Length: 176
Image (tube, rainbow, N blue to C red; front, side, top):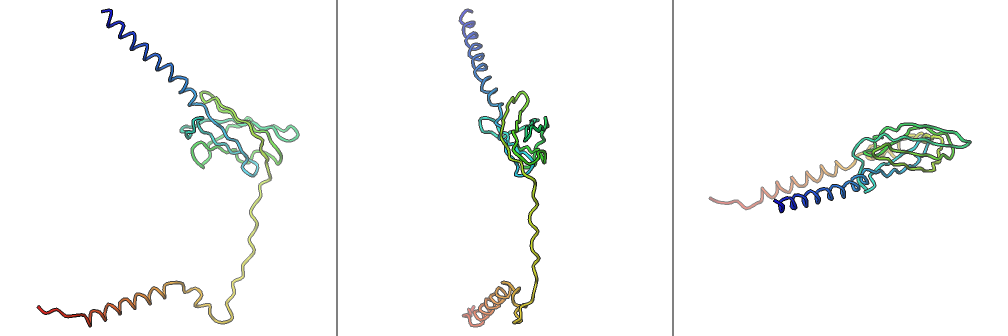
């Protein structure tokens, strides 16, 4: 009986050591790496990944706070996932023009935090394109300019069909 007890004790000890060794690795895998940047206008973008490089595979409610020029404060604001993909978050237009110190934090069990300096700019719209005048060429080649490739393809098909017809007419006849 004593031999069986020693074997069972060894199995349980090995199992306990395996579980305790895996627990810190699992806890570390749940930590997040948060990359904070400006969106080029008045917002902030955040990319969240696990510290081991894996993509974020679940929804995490990130919270943003920011301190701007002249002591202005924004937040705390809860961020929603952005449509760009897993692990991407965006604040939308939230800041005014100037330099902001932005802090983003993740709640437990992911308990992570990142701080970055973001330069917010007034959103700009693209320049209005200049109007284009459509004119007809003076030499009368307007009809040929848009002809494209199809007349050449049709001519090639006619030539191939004619060559096949000639080959059939003058081909050697078999006698049976």
